[in-house]
Length: 114
Ligand SMILES: [Cu+2]
Image (tube, rainbow, N blue to C red):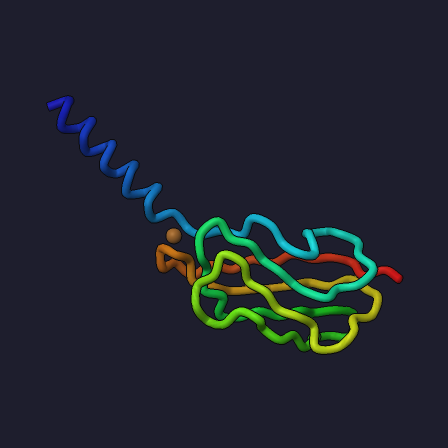
């Protein structure tokens, strides 16, 4: 009986780790960084993420960005600002679909100083 319980516990633990959410590991610019300019926005994931929505908001509101990676799951998501970015505090918000199929969302921020 105890062996059956142990085997079940192990199976559940394996299933849980195999279906863990993808998550954001690092970003460019780094969260809370102070940068002189922004020529790209990158989000690196531990497992491929399908980024379904992303926005960049600054002191003057929404900033237009162009995706360089499409709607397929990627380990590194990349987008570029369409125009030069002025000084101020910015927030990137994104939503996506994790490799295990769960919807994810997160945000990070940085300051452009010049
Ligand atoms: Cu999940």
